[in-house]
Image 1: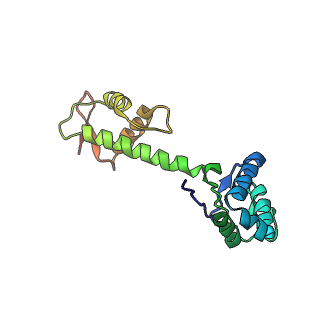
Image 2 (image 1 turned 90 degrees about the vertical axis):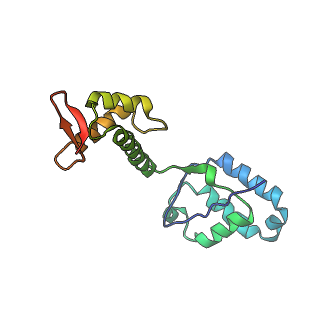
Image 3 (image 1 turned 60 degrees about the vertical axis):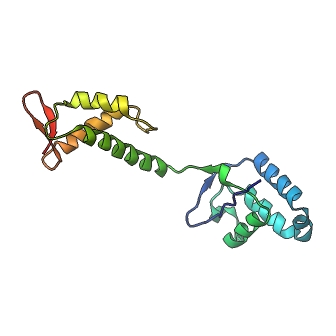
Length: 170
């Protein structure tokens, strides 16, 4: 059984959602896995238990004697994995949004050539049908519309040609 050990860092504070029942299960497993640690150093085990039960709170509110290095050592010593209890940050959505925009741009730029005869609506439909993967946006066609509008502006890479409004490379 491989156990991932998480390093807890106060500077890049991870947010956790861990219930008291989950902590109790972790501590019981730690005692069973290494019973001699529990009997040899009761203070370390008590510190770990206290810090785990207060993990949902910021470090300032957690306790005055919190030591990041010691907490990481105790996590490694008792082989406790906290990674399933990490709450994903809101910034992960921003990364996903930018990746979605990049994928849509790639799809569009593959279709647009110097002599293409595709309109904005047809491109939006094409992106909706051919976009693969997860997206934060409910409609990737709207993302395509925004990209087309941006890229057909004065500083963009594409131009709108003919009376049928075909989109082509400049």
